[in-house]
Image 1 (spheres, helix red, strand yellow):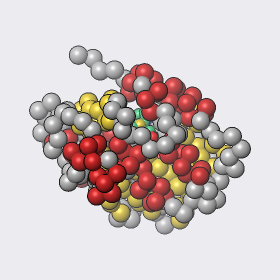
Image 2 (image 1 turned 90 degrees about the vertical axis):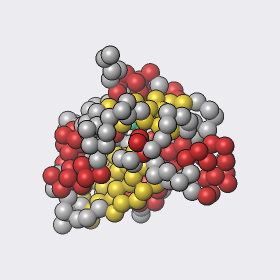
Image 3 (image 1 turned 180 degrees about the vertical axis):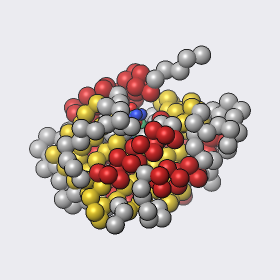
Image 4 (image 1 turned 120 degrees about the horizontal axis):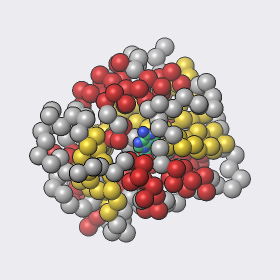
Length: 255
Ligand SMILES: C[S@@+](CC[C@H](N)C(=O)[O-])C[C@H]1O[C@@H](n2cnc3c(N)ncnc32)[C@H](O)[C@@H]1O
């Protein structure tokens, strides 16, 4: 069976991603931690790789960034990002359609922060390494790079059920590397939205960072459902309590 391209999936589902408040599971379990790790953002110039419809970019703008440049392979997502730029925002926000693994026409030589929020789960190891290299080259001295990915063990721990899963189709942790696992993540209103995970092992992320020229040991956070999430909406979050959902990496620009 031929797989739909990532671009086609996001063009078709752009409406389900458009949001002005926390809606998707990962808006609670991952993105607030991304904003925390990106900080302080006052006056920062930020590069958002795989920006989607700009949800995180808008949070970055709210946190006082001077500019955000986002690139995404789905032109529908980019159109929605442009439409959602807050009127009168002091942050200059620009979104362009393009493949982050080969993108070269950045509007600035250097950025204070680079982020890739759930981009690498759409890329092979080779494509991910190319993006990490671009992130390293574009990062200003003293800046840092933050990215999130599905936890490499998560697809192996969960049945195909709400509110989040990837189907490994019987592939093992090691044999499944660079294989695309189809999955779904749910919104709190009950809608399941298609996502995919080009599987990588934990070691693959460290190898790629080193090959891309990052020299510092990354900070790593294994993100999960917290007690606060469960207290807020038990039926939605409790099925995932105790599972490792996502991993956040933060790595400093090489000196
Ligand atoms: C799960 S969404 C996350 C969007 C956004 N970062 C967020 O956190 O809301 C993944 C995004 O990565 C984009 N994407 C996938 N492969 C890409 C590529 N090669 N280059 C640029 N964007 C890509 C998809 O189009 C989609 O918008």
